[in-house]
Image (cartoon, rainbow over all chains, first blue to last red; front, side, top):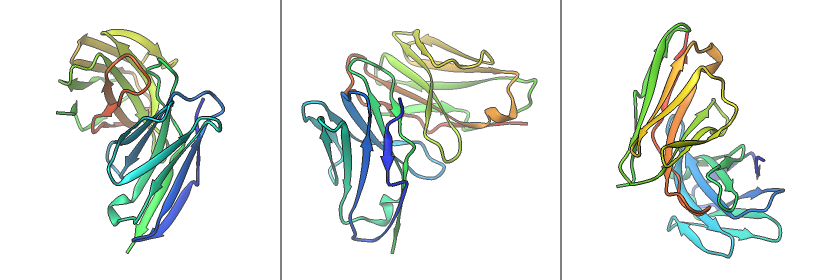
Length: 110
Length: 114
């Protein structure tokens, strides 16, 4: 089942902050965050695991609320290079099936 | 080296043609994936191979035929495609075992069916 992302799109000025949310009606074991620039492949940003472990990007942080089955990606002091479409993906406990949300388009303006 | 390489980068084919997309990884990953992505949409899973065996087929039409010749290679054979099959086809790989393994994507093959 596809996770739900919000907002659908956001426009920022350089230096501003943004939060992207990802929620699921099914039990989550891991949430994977990717950024995709136009015409390019998705690039891995971060994984959050049930139990609190995080793996990933130095300048981007995220949280995982197990009770709410929700993850949030925090982009602070945004840079022009942060522009792109952000996807969250969710997986079951042992599954190899990564299902992506519809994506959030982020545009950072100078 | 976290790299998944796909060839060709661009492919134009007619509806009666037979072509193949190729994918290679040398990270020792035992899971490999094919995803399809249409414009302004998220990647959609098509197939998963685990230990060179097909483990997930997301009800993909038979005109798409995957093949995993060995642990490093993944092919997608294309035959009698329709114009609506035009999309970006992404190959990916990961370790097996648990939900927290990173899935690494290749740069994709842009397919146009005419």
